Image (cartoon, rainbow, N blue to C red):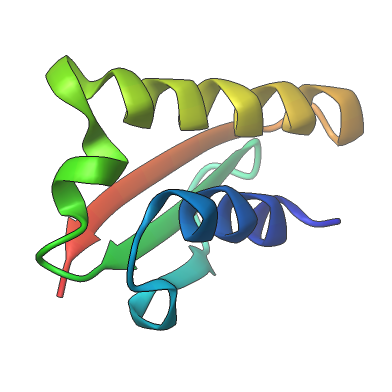
Amino acid sequence: MTLVELTEKIIKNIVQDDEAVSVKEFPSDNEKEIIIEVLVSDSDIGRVIGKNGKTANAIRTLVQASSSLKNGKYVKINIDKF
């Protein structure tokens, strides 16, 4: 499972409208970094970020841990709404 697939699976299990979830990987200037862009519907952004950003930080921690086991690259996850 790729990091994008892992991120998408986690996000889709959190939101109510899983059809409105978009997760894509973008190239970075730094070869040791991966940028993942997550877009969710306006009504689900609060669920994904969580109170004081705790849910978003937990997602980042899980994906970063998976990256450390696979390729050791730093993962940057940007969360936004449609």
